[in-house]
Every structure is written in C-alpha cells, then in structure tokens.
View 1 (cartoon, one colour):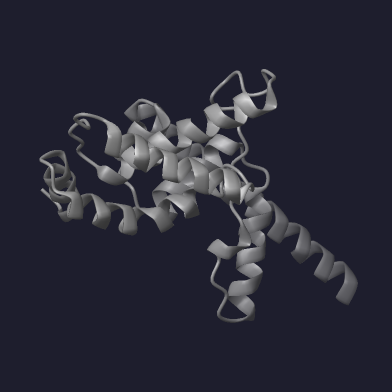
View 2: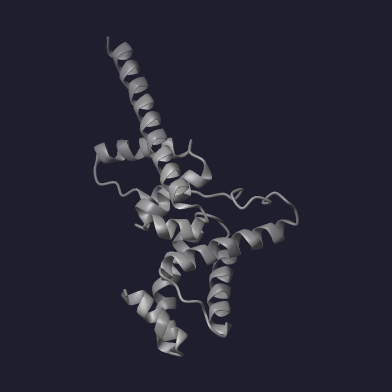
Length: 191
C-alpha cells in the first residue's frame, strides 16, 4: 500500500489529519489537471473545494486503489457536470465533448533546439482530439498507469492503450510532415 492509499485508509477510519494531508497534497495537482478542462479558475477552485467537502461529508468514502485516479476522475465529472448545468444547454451531452487543453507551460525549454522541438510538439498536439490530449497528459505528464487512466476516463484497458498508441502515432506523423515541409522550404530558399 502506497503512502497516499494509507492516508486515504486512515481518513476512512476517522483521521482528520490524514484528510488534511491529502487535501494539501492533491489540491495543486487537481488544479493543474482542472485547468486542462476549464479556464474558469474560480469555477475550478469551487469544484475542487466542493469535491473535498463532499468527500469529508460522506459517511464512509469508498476504498480506492489509487487516490490520484479517484480524485482526478471525481473532479473531471464534477467539472463537466457543472459546466453542462451552467450552460443550460446540451452542448456537453457526451462526456467526451469537453475542452481539454495542453498548454505551453508543460514544455520546459532549455535551449533553442528544445524550443523548436517543443514548438513542433505543441503544434502537433493541436491536431489531436481532446480525448487524445487528455490521455497523453495523464500518461506522460501525470505518470499514471493504464489502470488509473481507465478509472479516470471510463475507458477499458485496451481502448486506453489503443487511444494512446494512435495519439503517439499521429504526433509522430504530424511532426515528421512538418519537418519535411521545413526541410523542403529550406532547400528551395537557400538554393
């Protein structure tokens, strides 16, 4: 049992300090995840606080295998539900019809070469579906396992693996295509 799961179990057994530690640990991670779904930071903060309030007030929170996956999934659904209700329309009828944005803050740029690679990846990411962006974020930026990703996204294991594989293949294809265009342009321009 990892540290967070042990804290969760302690909280389930009435340890208020364990809950406080979980809140302090996960609030920034949940905020970081939530800004991928909505740019409304006030709404996001309200939803995170409401999520923890709901957990606190529940008589017996469920046992979980991954605290991170449980909290990410809970926040994701809470945000989608609130955004759907706030819009008073059915634009988010399908749970997959939400905006998921991977921003440039995820790319640490140390030199010009990595800056160019980063720009290529950011450009390529814009061609992916929101679901593909989300699975890349969860796998590579949050370092979650496929089981945790499946819990958060309600995808089965094989679908999650296939979606990630398709996203990576698409990124490679798009980046290669852009590199070829730059190469051809350079050849034509400098010759």
